[in-house]
Length: 125
Image (cartoon, rainbow, N blue to C red; front, side):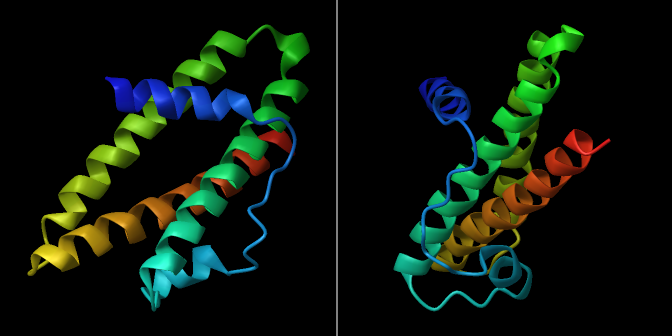
């Protein structure tokens, strides 16, 4: 429960687009599973979370006049739960214990990048 509270808090903590400044093509790296170091995993997890938070804040700001703030929050919290569950299941298909952890991280980075693009597309409608 504490984990979800921290994730939910982080969604609303950032305003505008925040980028970790790594310059790494994290979405592409996750699709091809081409991470070389734990540092790259860590940087990309931070970067993609910040990009997602920025996209969510932009969407929330755009939808402000439509009275759907609670729906947007519930939608995003539901997505976070679904992403975490899906990445846990995906990680269970890895053969080695270390592979499980890396598979889960790669899944979170990939899905978070995809979700950012989805939120951006909704905001552009």
